[in-house]
Length: 95
Image (tube, rainbow, N blue to C red):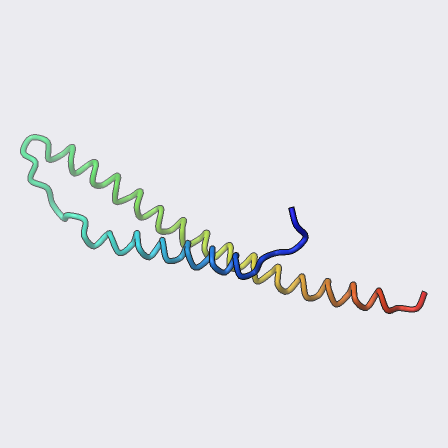
């Protein structure tokens, strides 16, 4: 464990999560709109519906995670600066 937050690493994680969400979202355009599976068509359409729904939820989750990491990083940056200033001031105060 460390006392320091690696802001660059958090920025990278946020970007990676966001990019992964966009990649999964772009795959959605290649999903078939219909299936000719004979007697198995209803089952195949049901499976396709579940896969499409799960992919959509994954996109939303990746986007939310990306935003949460970016927001936490921003908060850490602000608090780190404020706390460092307070600590530096307290070190120079006459007691």
